Image (tube, rainbow, N blue to C red):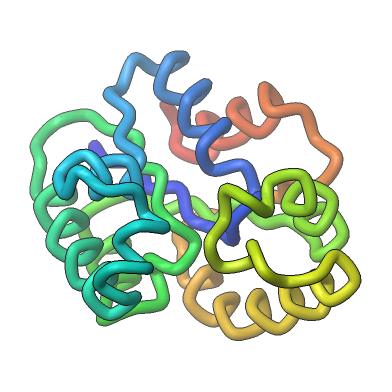
Length: 171
């Protein structure tokens, strides 16, 4: 079984996927880290040197390959992954998809502390960030909401979020 965690950057995909995979003893794959490893470049370097379209192509290839796996996996996806091609369709077809939902305020609080690690928001001022997040979230929610399950992450302990995911999946 593959469990795919989706949601906007800062919603907790990386952290939740780690504790979830440890708890249920599934292998963890972070899609962005996998793309970096395969290409020997960081995601910001791929964006800078080859552009977003090239990155999305690499992302799709890696996604298809991982979802075809017979292995028990927790797959942490990039915030934009569900938006491109028919990725959300294949994520739902080949895995159990979970949307980690967070409010604009929660995302803003988390992301202001991580801006330098996030190419998409690195050059956006703190005062413009909430509007950017809200607009982006509005565009992406149409894709995120297609997930089979949804879990709210606002003001919640990661352990509780992980337990809710396990309950929803009957693991």
